[in-house]
Image 1 (cartoon, helix red, strand yellow):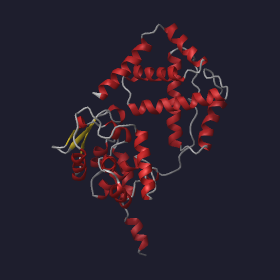
Image 2: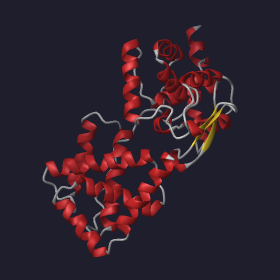
Image 3: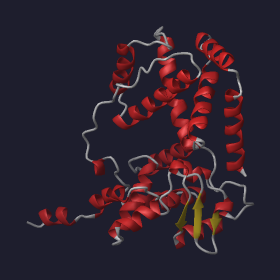
Image 4: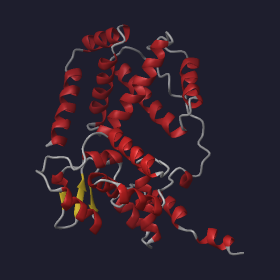
Length: 311
């Protein structure tokens, strides 16, 4: 029900902009830029993306709107002409993000939102500019497995020992079921089948649906949590709130906080250590490319490290 309502809201937003005469759409966009009306411009971005792609996940909406908001705020604060920014304006913005400590991946997310904004502005005929086409973040020199560091099993166990029931469920949804942040918070009781020991991830990355096996410990925690009507969320709230709760728990227990997504890396690493093949890991985690799962093998294989410790 929640997912259907969200999609209905998306379609309504898209129709509102699509049904406008082109001149009126352009007028409203120009007025929003002049008035620094952030809300209207972000709605335009979302409506254009839905029109173009037919569907957009809640997490993609969040990231695109964040990138557009960060750019627009910076542009307005610096008196930059939003409809016709100079190349040095966009490049400087990216360099400032990097100087502020943003990782290449985070800068890439913000850039994607800024590019989506200008695609919407071109659709509304407010501009013909493509200011972010050639702007790129610095190359990330870290190896793929260094960017996907999992929580050590000992740290996960420390967290589980002190976590309240709902947090235990959250930890196991990430660290065993391998769900992403938005998948954890978006999961409803209607998506969970305790009798068959599975859950269904609806509207996952790329709008895909997948079936995930549940562990005995997760089934036990879910039963203890108490099954509620189908439309109720198991965890609920937002991905940001879930990250904040995990950070607080890590601080309390003295466990280094690696991010909520690192629980997913923990799930992949555990499967590799247990001897499962790349295809099994990719299916469990919902990777579209089986090679993505190869990264977990770097964390799972400790033989080389052990070899050098003993000579």
